[in-house]
Length: 439
Image 1 (cartoon, rainbow, N blue to C red):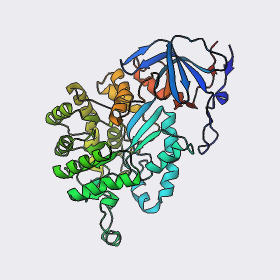
Image 2: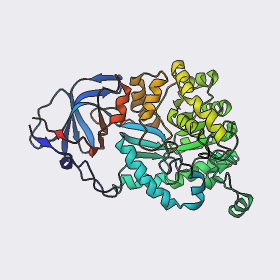
Image 3: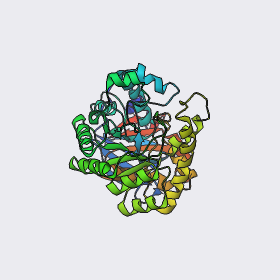
Image 4: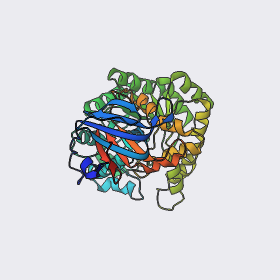
């Protein structure tokens, strides 16, 4: 049996800025086990034929290959569709210096950091992300699509839409002199206070090349403001955002911790509720009725609750919110699953460290969500939230986004932390130390 080393498979790129070379026209990936995202079951041996960035055929067992077909054998591993994280912020990462850095760093500084964060995210098995708020992300998306840097496929929101003093008001925490010099932010900066402003803010995001709209329907944990859960839009304002977004083919994700803000967002027709800390039975019922997805971000909740115990990590106005709100999200996710609310995967990484995204699966299972459902939440469910049908499953005609990990993640969810093979769009980004060729 011939041995093919990772260098032959173009696994270890020498530099972040060098585009990957295209693999042989047809590549066969052999998996000892295969996670079927439609059924949630782990199947036996399969061979996946990849051609021109797409899956050409999925063959049970070990396939006989024609001459010239490059092959990768992943022994004692489970292959899965590449995962999608529906809530990340690739332009930043939380630290005690985060609040002061906004006054010292330029957009270029954040962009260079984002390149490394994107690479870590892809290496962890996340071939697609939805970046929900950050002016860097549309540019990073374009650089990745052009092959200039490595990273996941990005659906970028650009600047989140907020109200004055709301969670995504960029002037929160500024002193009066600085606020006077800069002037009040408006729709161009993603801050609205009327129906007309709401429409303009969505149109501005379209002008800037966003893929999705993000609103902050309630206060937030990490913003420099007292309230973490008060509603921050009127019903009419949210409705104007959703209706205008539909004109441009956009879906709307709503950051929300408080019950009333969530209710307004769901009634207005948002696609997903992010965090959902104080979600009550009425909101759950409405979400089920209207097909609204829930993206819990348990990781972020646990992370901020832990960091709130460290003096000096957060400003004092933030610390009480982090301690009280963050600790509740895992319990909310458990109740939502039992109630039948549709759940999709998201971490809010950028709050926690990029590259550790898969730990959300472990937290979901701790909350009582079955491992198979948790894995579906990052594959089939995530594709539904994005409104795409070309990824999320390993089937002929879909994108060749394939990852693999030792063990069986349905039997032991901790296996998700060991991803060591990542293929995105037919190109190998990461592979085990050695991969053997089929006979």
